[in-house]
Image (cartoon, rainbow, N blue to C red; front, side, top):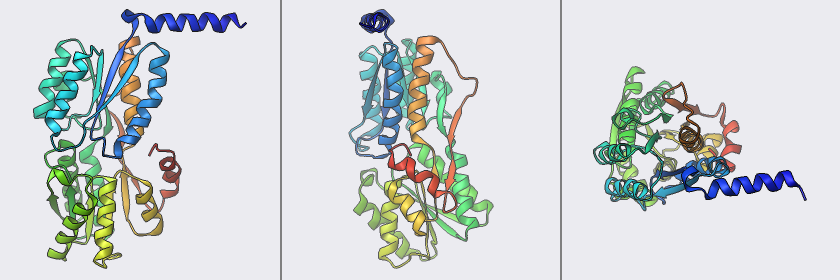
Length: 319
């Protein structure tokens, strides 16, 4: 018998069974129907291995959809608080709804980590840090890129109007495009079209028919770029209308590789999940802090020049 391993196993069991020494955290994200969160979840799951090895636990919570988004997020925050967690990692998309609930949690001594959205709001509830892309700078980069590649009128599609990160992205696109001499039209569709491929494709198609001057579309999610690609193809405008998107998927990268999509903006959601979970737990457990605040995981432009480097990561579910 290996007594060293036996002693280590006994110590680990004792640590995990001692409530006073356990640190439990909740990670709250968006719709279970939104494939983006699968990449975040992989990062959370990988970080959970470290958390569990040190006697803690991670509860991954998702809203069912985006139809009742603000109230659903508040309910999940309150659920986490009721479960007695020591920390909550969460994006702040809707400050009017989320910030009061997060302040209430912080007032009870719960540590808050911000990721993906809410960089500007994190000081309102004393968030430890922010892991994610600077949404405005990402938008500027995307708008400027499309304009410098020949676009004169860019349509920026918002699938969930009012979400701070999405509105900020399109504002950035508008400013970046203007800097390079192009204009931007922002299309806001009802939130119930989020994840609706057919409905979104029809909405994009209608806009392209109504305004033939639109020569570029940028979406704020990879699934929406699939919808736009379908609309562009159905109208016979492939090659005439540039397509860009925030975030990536296998289909997005395949189109870039084939020359049917111009670019994608990567914010590295795997890192957002991994870093927000591991750093929140490490702060609670060990008192560690990062000197850099915020910690930016993007943006990075992926186009034909570097698409090969991203393909393997997408296949593994991490990009």
